[in-house]
Amino acid sequence: MSGIADMDSRIAAADSEFPALFQLFGGYFHQDWRQEHATPAAALTAFIEEAPPEAVRAAAAELQQVLDLDAGDAALTRLLREGFDCNYRPEEDGMTPSAWLRAVAARLQPAG
Image (cartoon, rainbow, N blue to C red; front, side, top):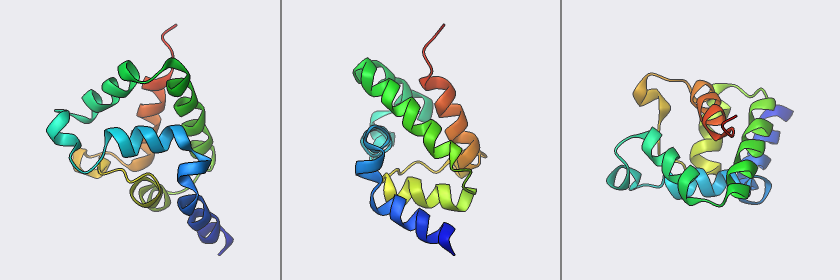
């Protein structure tokens, strides 16, 4: 039961606990994101190119924290939708939320 309560509190505090992710997912995957970006990859590229480098680094670090929670896909779906106001549904492209978040994390890593 504490896992559900813990996720509920993370969802409620998502904007303050994960501000860079809140900006990424809520700002680039808002309800009309498909009108601005042809694909989820294009929306993510826009964030990477438009956000200050420190915001991209912060988003990568926060996303690693989310992945380290080892939450199930149902909890990650709730966090994306309710906590970050993300209107992209990875399932529509045949991906689980955890797989998509891992792919996003890989894209946020600096080229090296």
